[in-house]
Image 1: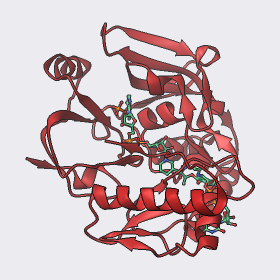
Image 2: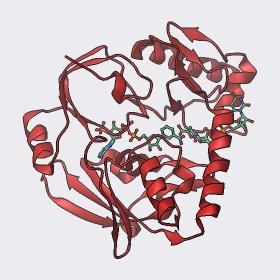
Image 3: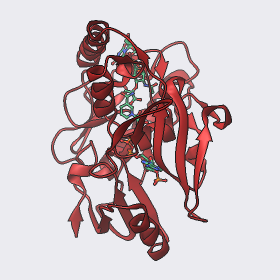
Length: 278
Ligand SMILES: NC(=O)C1=CN([C@@H]2O[C@H](COP(=O)(O)OP(=O)(O)OC[C@H]3O[C@@H](n4cnc5c(N)ncnc54)[C@H](OP(=O)(O)O)[C@@H]3O)[C@@H](O)[C@H]2O)C=CC1
Ligand SMILES: C=C(O[C@H]1[C@H](O)[C@@H](CO)O[C@H](OP(=O)(O)OP(=O)(O)OC[C@H]2O[C@@H](n3ccc(=O)[nH]c3=O)[C@H](O)[C@@H]2O)[C@@H]1NC(C)=O)C(=O)O
């Protein structure tokens, strides 16, 4: 059994029988042929591992491989395992602007393309030219131009399609490094001021169509700091659940349900999970 603790940002201690670190596309295809249930782990920053043991699920860890970043004729191309931080630093090194807003978002390019990473008024698809995918059923590769990609708030059409993200090309523009660095510093300080330092997976719920945020509702109800086992609503940010040490996925899930019930009762707002239950 293999521990997934370092492959999910909640640091939940779950074990899996089948964990793969493929080095090539052919190896990925082999895994899909061998297993009926496969989960791709990018940076594991948007998942809740709800089981302590996985016997029948195969996990593919992407972030240690597929890490090439290259200049191409129409932009900068990053493979699925590249982290947003790595792409942002590469762009900064080359005085290229466009992705610096996402400097501190703990996601892989694959996860970012699936979810349309957003932060501080910017969305990653604003800077994408095309995305390369592998169809998980026919095992054919396809390049999809942004014009043909349906995306929105925390959504892309890839979320509901049987595809693996292989990489994406970004449209970046020249800018003095000092300006890029100023923006990175500014965003970093805003995030450090708001988000908790403990292990978490960022916002638990999507922003509801309501005049105040989840964090504010949770704060006004008086739920900040509420804890079930090792899972706690962050005393710093009411929209985030943290692992205080030995949280299980089930405890996080119980806390999720508790927040949903309380918010429904106090505000008649039905919260929708942003995080993915595995
Ligand atoms: N704004 C913020 O501050 C934060 C934002 N986030 C967001 O959460 C997301 C997390 O990214 P990341 O940690 O990399 O993702 P995860 O490892 O959390 O994976 C989440 C899901 O995305 C799918 N996925 C991941 N990589 C690929 C790929 N290459 N091809 C196909 N599917 C893939 C998998 O779906 P399947 O189960 O179908 O295999 C997986 O279950 C990002 O969009 C990020 O923006 C997270 C934390 C903070
Ligand atoms: C962290 C994530 O993304 C974040 C993203 O970083 C930030 C900044 O753009 O805006 C969203 O959070 P958010 O709506 O909680 O925004 P924040 O800027 O953290 O908070 C908004 C406001 O809520 C209030 N607030 C927040 C937390 C709290 O405990 N109490 C409170 O009153 C504050 O006034 C704050 O100014 C994204 N979340 C979603 C679900 O859209 C993520 O997706 O994981």
